[in-house]
Length: 122
Image (cartoon, rainbow, N blue to C red):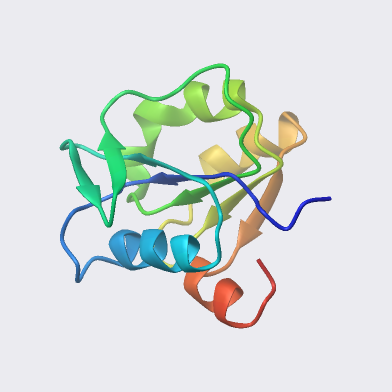
C-alpha cells in the first residue's frame, strides 16, 4: 500500500488558527494528496477549498472538522464516496453517522488527525 493516502478534509477553512487548516498543512508536509471541502471557496497553502462534494474519486480517508449538526448534509455523500476510513476529530463525534458508516463497512476512527500524523499512525 502506498504511504500516500488521499484525504478529504471536510470543514476546510482559510483561517490559519482553525484545526482543519492546520491539518491541511500537516497533510501537505507528509505528501498526502488532499481534497478540501468548506463553506467558502479559497485555498490553504496552494490546496483549493471547494464547496461541492466530489464524486467518482478514490479517497482513502475523510477527516471531519464539522460539528454533528453540520455533518448531516454530507451523510449520503460520505457513504457514496466509500472511503477506507473516516476520522472523527475531537468535537465531531456523531453516533448517527457512525452507524451509517458501520453499515457501509467503512472504518470509523475516533482520533485526532494532527496527533496521528505526528506519531506516524496516519
